[in-house]
Image (cartoon, rainbow over all chains, first blue to last red):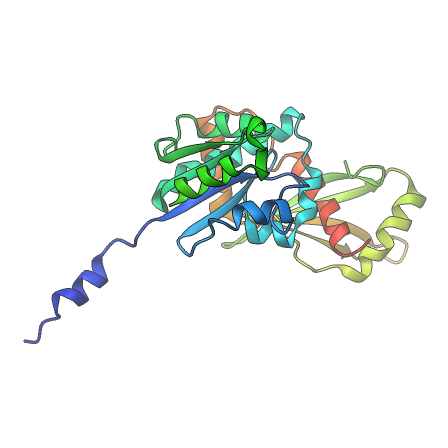
Length: 156
Length: 120
């Protein structure tokens, strides 16, 4: 009886390699397609990295969705409790399934969506995978070299 | 709910194996404003607007039952049942007490986003 070589069996049964995720809080002036965003996030785009925009009301949206539907950002009032609650539910739903897909999650930490992120991800399955990359205004914010170095180092 | 244009009220829900589809009746707040704003939608119904995972929105024109009854414009929101199930699980885990899985702010965002996309 013919038998398959070990390399073929390995390929058939191996668990697919988990990917990495980068979560970036997005605002009308800092989103995919805007030069300030592209100058920073463009530094770390790689084939094994999925990049999500974090919104207060809609949770995480892929870059593709944000490029296709930038208008959706205009409907999320960051201060409305109903909006924040929906953001928490959607983000938590993502966070509880993310470890099935991602081995590492990096978060750019700044802005009003951080409260939603904390409420949603604290205690979730994704929490142990998260590395926080703080954005400091004192170090030049999005344009600062310190943030660029930190981001590149974190995303390897 | 839709700004100065109309109030959207859930009128029926239809389930299929692949989708849960909710129909919202639109009640004009001010008839002239509604007619002016929504007239353009009649030529742009059927397009699926899907900016959020697991959800899409569209508008349909429902024919009046008889000659005296005018056609009515309805907002339709479709959901992926698996996505909805996951959200309901999350709501239970977080002990969220809410009437609907799709809150009014999401309905409003989809309804108005659609209008922007079709240029109305």
